[in-house]
Image (cartoon, rainbow, N blue to C red; front, side, top):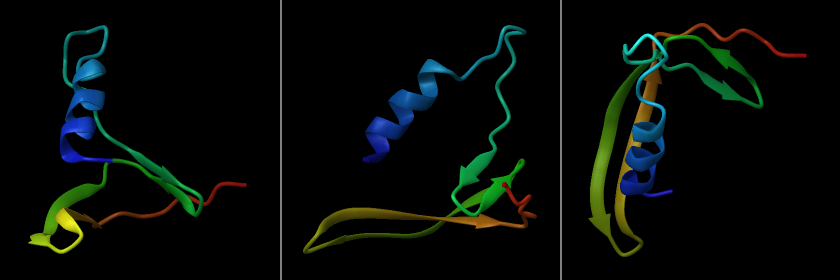
Length: 65
């Protein structure tokens, strides 16, 4: 996924029925992360192309069954 694709995906669901911006949570195969702090960890332009690495910080995982 590119940053442009992610931005377009998020734009489609940016606001809830109340008109306010939505909170972001992250679900992975390993758990659920409510309201994580997401930061840019690294960027670069290399042989593989432009890259963006994001870091998910300060979260507690809620295990899913």
